[in-house]
Every structure is written in structure tokens, then in C-alpha cells.
Image (cartoon, rainbow, N blue to C red; front, top):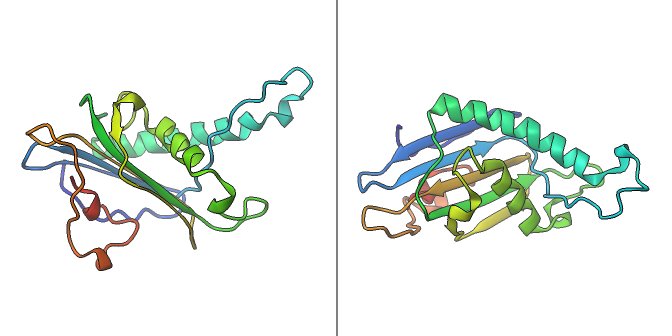
Amino acid sequence: MTGPRVLEPAAGSVAVNAWQDPDGSRHVLLVAALRPMSFVQRPLYGRGMGKEASPGRAYNAWRQATREQMLVACREAGAEPLTDPSLCAVFGGGMTKQGRSKSVLAHDVDDLQKALSDLCTGLLYINDRQIRFVPASAWYDDGADWFSVAVWGPDASGILGLRLQGDPAQLGHTSGDWLRA
């Protein structure tokens, strides 16, 4: 575990940083230069649909490929899943305008957040029921495809919180400094 630092992964890759504050609060920051995808519910009328038409197929393929990249990045960074019973998490991302999925405005923010939460279960935390506080979720139409997840546990006194660290005007959307609790 090193300390907070700016993560700027190359296109198509994932970067992870894990550290522990002097007060005992553990943190994991993951930034991926990958296109996020919405969580998709499987249709109830599966009998008449061909396998190719199932809307869950694309999501499942994306989920499997993305989880594999995230797992490798977590192992390289030495990030173990946080085991605290209560955690804070911040989810966010950006998308370029491509084809029919014109922007993040075409997606439900809750569905995007649920997709990232599912991806992180078992990698950044044991179970998504540990997430007790989500102070912000930010999604942008951007010049690049990316998503980020920051997760942290309580400090030594057992308090979960979010404190701004550094000058907000100088912190970009891929900077982990503002996510310290």
C-alpha cells in the first residue's frame, strides 16, 4: 500500500491504488480507461427470443472481460477486498458519443452505478451490502471512455466520511486526492 496518487491508465487498461491513512482508514481507487455499460435486466419473455437477441448477452460479455482486467490490476497493486462492515463508495465515468448509445444521458445513472457495483463485488469489497454511504455519483459526456470507483472504510473512530483534500480547481475527474476520507 503506497498512498493516494493520480491514476491515468492508458486506453483499454485499468489502474488501481490501495493505501491506508495514518488514522487506519483503508482506501482503494480504481480508474479504468474502458467504456462503462448499464446493468441490464434479463427479459421475462425468453421463450420466443433467439439467443442472439438476449439483451443480457452483451452486458455479460462486457462484465466478464472487464472483471478479468480489474482482477489483474488489483493483484498487481496488492489491493485486497475491504472487509469493514460499513464502507463509502464513489462511482463515476464518462462516455464518448458512439453509434446508438449517443451519451451517458441515454443511460439511467442508477443502472450505470449498479453495473460498477456488481463489477467490484469480490474485488474491492466482499459484498455490495457493505456500501453504506455513496456521497456522489458523477457521469459525463466526455472525450474518452472511462469509469472510476473509490471505496474506503471508516477511520479509527469508526466514522465514515468525505473530506476534500487539495485545491478543487486543480483536481481532475481521474484524481484520487479528493476521494480521501
